Image 1 (cartoon, rainbow, N blue to C red):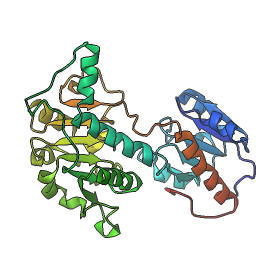
Image 2 (spheres, rainbow, N blue to C red):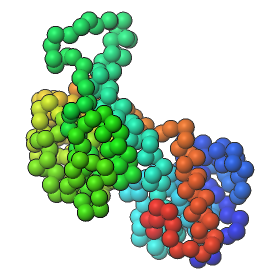
Image 3 (spheres, one colour):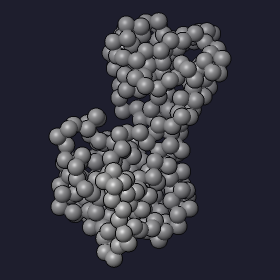
Image 4 (cartoon, one colour):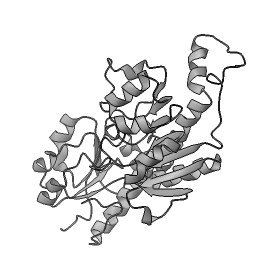
Length: 321
């Protein structure tokens, strides 16, 4: 594949301000930005490089014989059909690592929100209710120190999350497909197949793994039943890693103490979902990866990959296809 020396870049996202950030760094290549699928389909033929995530459709390459490279805005790549990329000779790289700080900090934020009852305090503020000191341990704030967390997924996000949780003096168990790859700083590391036997030990089960055939539905009815009644589930991975109906049943029956979810099976979460109103469920709207630095981080990856393609190198940063 011959890659152009002056590629035209299409930034496609409903909210991210990639073009603005690109202009701030001098915009060394021609570019344009679209905000909808209709706009993207209309203009994809003008682009050599596409920077995209949620607006991607596997029908787009057929509309653009010019397209050479897709830089995903997301770390997850389950929306991209590898066979389509192979068919059209298009390269694909993920944004893995661009949100490592953001997602790991978000997971910790959810855990602190639960233990320090910050979600409850916010609700009380809106009610103008100043709660007093609590004799009931079930209502009292708690600490992370001394608790056990299972971190499922020990890639760049998981490794940083483990580092943060160790700073809170937690006992951290890492779970990954290949435990021989290293501990990522955890006190213990085990294969994903060992998760069922580990779950009864956890005060927190934190999901930061990619969505794959091996992780789809990983936390189902059996896994939830294996967790302690006082344990919490935190999902900053993908909604499909959890069997959502089984989770709702577990929360309704208090089989586990609670769940904090940044991702759901359907997004936006349907109005009729019980997750909205369950008192032991805490939601954020898939914002775990969003920070003011996100576009900059992805643009750094994109520029490095464009440079590699222009030099004729075959290996990309976060190469997928």
